[in-house]
Length: 637
Image (cartoon, rainbow, N blue to C red):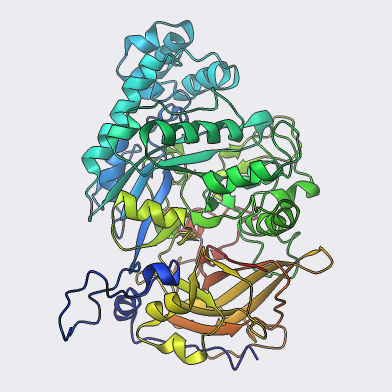
């Protein structure tokens, strides 16, 4: 069935294809169908697009970038502030902290400067020798070490005494206010509605017992609202429920809107998607409602590892073993197998179905996004332009060996710079490049993740699509009218109907061809057990789909490791698919998301080895396959 139900096409070239595909979109059909309202009431209207209101573009950005205003960036060599971060994101050439010129191949459309709320601006105040930093012994000691050039000593001193010890001389709201106002001013100065969006936001950096529970907080609003509050940090509380209370208070006080994005589940040692609260209570309906309200998105891929799937959790998924970080947490506590299901997105989405059956609300009903978590002020995500996670690890011949995650007890938790990945990016389907339009799209989950390249992907689910609909020039309008886009919900299947999906995926015009398109399905079966299955629905190079729902053979590889190069002589530029769920049960809760794989390309370490003439680090593959993950579509009986 899959083979006959799959349509695969190749466009003449990607730029032409991207222009055509950019006229497609997502949300809910009723909301974004072509409407006759507000259309001039003339007897004959020539233009068919006058009444269109659905999102029609992908806007690319990074929701998680740190500048010198973050303590763990500014105190380890980052000298670039928000101004440089925004200018770089806009496509301008800047000089990195290491003195190297750097530029994006294409500008971003939007950015969230998400500096840590904790010790906000400490390095900037040290650089200015501000009295706020000099009035305490810890501040003065850190200042003196930094000014003498002992950057690592300053970082250790501040980190041990303030971040770990909790003795923060900058906790005075007066000091926080000054720095927060500067951050807001930079965002306002660089925000250009219609051309570039600079969101106001920050990171809440909770790590109880070394388990990473960080969230990025993103405001929909302008300076007038943001100035009414101060960022809520982990020094105020390490419990996400307290963060949600602060968010509710922000909205009540300002009339604005705010959301939070959880990240780094793979360093949480099973706490990120636990079914108990941080205080040890079993999660209840109230918890589920609040979490699903305030945290609509999950950062599934970033420099500290990919968090979509794990081979132990998904042994039948040959692509699950992609850049996993699964050794331990920040404190050097070794990972245990029972922690893994509560760290990875796919297993968390399945657990959410189980919790919804019990509570009536799904606490883990999140869309998927990618971000960098770069601490260099530089949102680089491409393998051949990877400026690393922190400034002391910017490009150079000796940047493979430095540790990222420590191993203080020698138990095997150490993770190194060469194991970081170039991820990631977030694509948002919206109609306008404004704070309001992009934020609303994030809230409705019409957004997706890539591991760094700009794959364009769109998926719709409904009950009545047919194969010909995938080929229609008004593909998006057809999708909205007949179903829901990524992030949407289907309910109460009609008798005799099964979920039908329509998918289009287009390669990055400056990147690699596509290998395949897959549908990942997770469901709660009639006996209460959680299940998952992967269906290849489009294979490049005219490969057939076998009885095991997989492309009949590997796409192959053109990677030349020594030269750090590849060619697009394999794979396809565009893949399209129509698919009807052959295992659908109208009584079972389920979700579907799309994974798109590129052909193999050199990993960033391979580019580095070729450029600097050094050996590849042991234990790291020379090539990799970039990918995209869409937000799921859920089915509820």
